[in-house]
Image 1 (tube, rainbow, N blue to C red):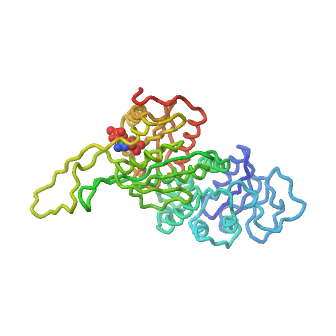
Image 2: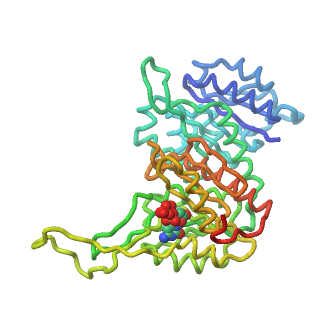
Length: 421
Ligand code: CTP
């Protein structure tokens, strides 16, 4: 079991860190806690000391009576020289709640208290659970800090919506329930085992654009965030990752090979080359089903026209074509954007029709998730069953999808026949 370093920053939700520590202990992990000075206004250090069974540290210059040891470990004979001994020893750093101020410090690399110094010195995986007033969470500064921290590898557990601490306030910013934070911590710990080591993962992301003329196109609203979260997740688990990005404008994770395409046809030809050497294909791109039959070379002028009719022709179904060429040992995951009732039946039919191992179903009729948003909520459909992944950040959803990929690869079954029901 793991050594969890729990950072608690200032906010009403600090009290929930006590339950998080208790659940982590119950799951067999050992926990040490660092509190920021501001958090002491909400939670005295006696509480976490009692629950973790170890001293809670606040200041950079105070001595650690446990000399950096986690509960259950013998304390070293000598005092460690560094006040950063705890972060050197931990398997994961989890900051819950992470206030707007602490996030800003972590994003800019400030080290003005023990928690921010520890975070700066941390080489272990980091999980951040923001909790704050909804306006503070939505502020572009906080959004930018979170995006930067995610890009650097932190797993952000999206806050819940609901009643906030100030009376009468409602919105996003509530610290998620401790069991959800612990699940994220445990997922992040799985990275340490590099569970996809040696695998080649190909991810498509974004939305294709089919030109109408020199300046206009038929496209869709996919930003590519979900696909990039999947690529990042696979890379963090040790896979060699290639992405094929259709018109993706959001920041891309490092340590991944990125190939850019525009149309469904380009995506198809790059994918067929890359698929040959891939072990896993995750097809998150929203590929246009139709394209203009003819592309005008210049710009279609408005002058002298009453209207404009576009004739569209179908594109090739890239995923179905690749599934037809699959070799034994390849795992194929598709996405299905469905609307409303019967979504899961249609997704299951798609799984069979396209010959896939799993399909990630997005109900695009639900508000606040999917296209262009930071969160998602999906059902992962396999031939064995269905897994509901509750609303969370795209990073959390990506972790659940990669867990499914690992499961599918642990229990290999014969490749599904295309068209089988
Ligand atoms: N897809 C593809 N090539 C296409 C269209 C879709 O590879 N021309 C892939 C998508 O990347 C996704 C999956 O197929 O992984 C499902 O796409 P979707 O458009 O929802 O399914 P369709 O088969 O097009 O069915 P329909 O539009 O009728 O729901």
